[in-house]
Length: 124
Image (tube, rainbow, N blue to C red):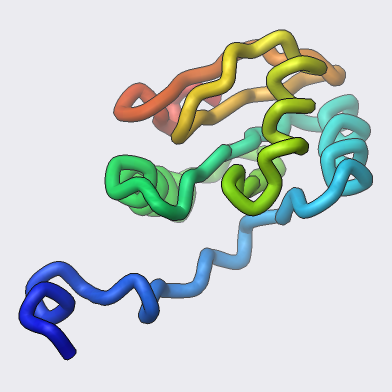
């Protein structure tokens, strides 16, 4: 292990994501999220796996969710692996693409969104 990995950690040993996440890996997954938004709020977190800021914001957000009792369905999108879906979200919800980004959806429409350090459970 290199000195940098000892100090900063290795990207090969990333911790698994918490169980509350639903994953958007296809357009069908996105459609499911949009349908679910008619029953309760849906929060979509768009994450860049290569960005330190995105990783930091994701970790902070996950801690907040773990302490929250909000009735929300949380969806996770790896936007580097699924860039076309990220673009579809931006187009369909009329929200400018950001990374990291949290989009709150109700009744199939984006009602709030935030990026970078503005991302918080309080947005929901």
